[in-house]
Length: 67
Image (cartoon, rainbow, N blue to C red; front, side):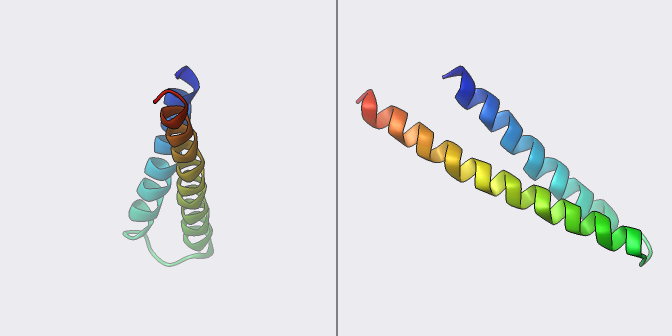
């Protein structure tokens, strides 16, 4: 069960940091750096969502095995 908690913290990191990065860039002037940072933020959010879906599958499998 400890790995599930670790995976949740990784998911929270990627989605939170990605979202924060994107939101902070909305208030900066247009530039190529801003565009690059927004793209990196979107990628981080996508990684978080992907890891969350894998983590959810593991949780459901754990519950099914111990039911």
